[in-house]
Length: 377
Image (cartoon, rainbow, N blue to C red; front, top):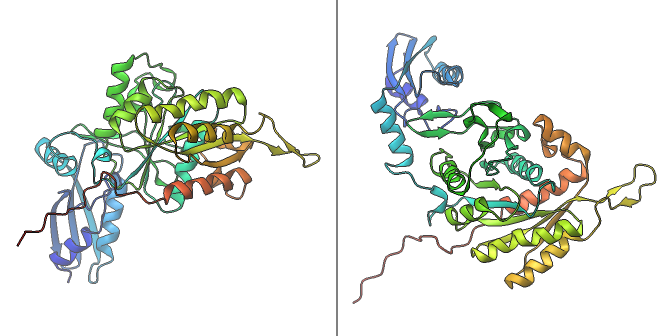
């Protein structure tokens, strides 16, 4: 006959699909009743309309059914009280709202994906980098910080809405389990409703995306910034002082010129420039195979060179992504190219860049080492 201890141990292996913590740790197990080989488990849901109720039921059932001696499993569902939700929220995020990624001991690598102007494919690059990193086994989050022109949810195939628990936002997931937050689910009018905010509101929205969202333990957080050097770029630098900047440009001289300005924000805010990505580079002619520089050539290298000189440190050209119409097509249907066609030349470059950024170790600068002075004799 199964024992309570064995059942509790099995439930300790069951994670909440959104919070990604054991349900025992979250206080979600209400009761366990054993009648011979029949086991009944009562589980608290965080909210009445929890979209993961069926998934939670299935996970609990499978975990308990696998125990020796268990012949039947039933799962009952209840809803947490306000006090229980507050206690859970405090255990997850602490009594005060803070940005976990700005703490000195944070191990999450944070990248601000910037561009000087729109139309260079910055969001497509961000979505594909996130999907590629997730495919490499990393825990990845994306903040769609382009409040006016948000497009990341579509590009990563996000269809669910966030779940709210006492003011804590559980982000939905997209391709490969990438966690995504965007302005889209907070607009009653849906995708067609414009956002008409000025600077202070933009700053507050970004702050909430970082402090009020339960991101869990991320390896990498990407912020898809709006083009240019305006309010959001400055707010991101203030809220995430340890973040690094990746500049996206096209080979065109005009695009490269304004991309330099986006990169120079990092110099003004004392942030590190992780590198430059050139998108929409040349592609082989479908008839003769000769390379065609549809948008010119050399823009990415020029941006990297100018920025390296300006900050007196190497700013590498991380990669040149060849033009591929499937990159756009995949963004429209929520199927990133790195997943849908991983052997495509553009996908291979993107996966190479993702590997370079995702696996680069953090330095010790600004991190607490937990050392205390030795006593003097």
